[in-house]
Length: 165
Image 1 (cartoon, rainbow, N blue to C red):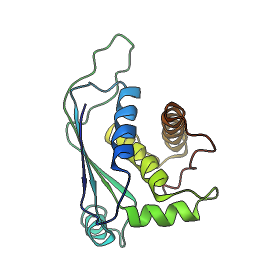
Image 2 (image 1 turned 90 degrees about the horizontal axis):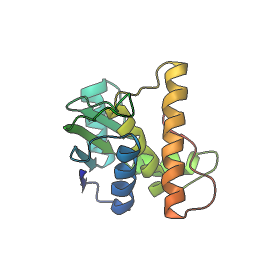
Image 3 (image 1 turned 180 degrees about the vertical axis):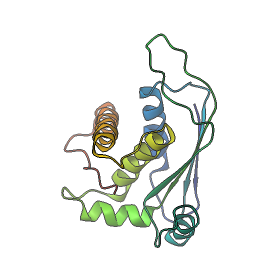
Image 4 (image 1 turned 45 degrees about the horizontal axis):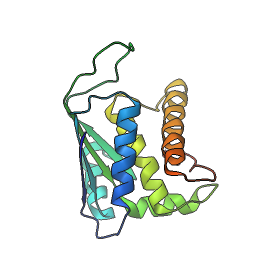
């Protein structure tokens, strides 16, 4: 899996954890191992510009996903996953820090960025949370992936609750 993490935010983040959880999520979703993903970490001003340009919404947001080849997880166990460019995930640590602090369980900026990375991966794979059934499916997958990765890392304690709106 070719995953690039480019931190342009000026804020120190755990880039290794973002890379590792993205790799774990893609493997868990059975995405071809030669597929490519880019994760870009930006400051609040850059994220606000993207949010306005692409969503016509004011203010910075936590995560945005820009799919390229519209890859989807294989439906059948014996189905070969397609190879391609997944696209870009853009993260904003300033928003992540605030969301982590405001979450019911309270968690760190890096834990929030890990959650947001998985959220972004799922969006690249076609998942959405506009409707209640879609939300339940996507957030269930998100929690299972984050919990599985945390267990592999030997992290104990409650996983971050979804804070993505």
